[in-house]
Length: 150
Image 1 (cartoon, rainbow, N blue to C red):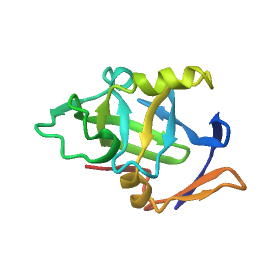
Image 2: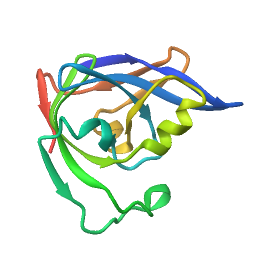
Image 3: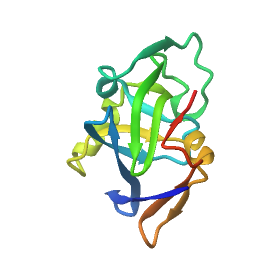
């Protein structure tokens, strides 16, 4: 199956853009996710997601490289429910980080609160196709109502 999600393009500075989509968490809370093709892992903001997370796991040693290499307060959490249009995920395992620095940046350019970043792990798993002209993200997945990721 496929689902197509509208993308909002946010211009942060002259010719510097971020791609954003909307998601639903815990079946009631809306949030905004940045599509980050350079991020290896999908991340949720710990301040936003902590009330919803069903399990936490401390990360003993940060083995990340790049921009997140110096982050030491990361956790892994299980989000009970996330939906992106028709794609519904249960027990989604993701990295939890404090994204307040990203939200401070966004206050200058947008009224959106960033609840997370969609990383390459997610984009590869769901065979993501970004259509810049149509401003859409298309995801492909198995024909089941709820997909559990662990």
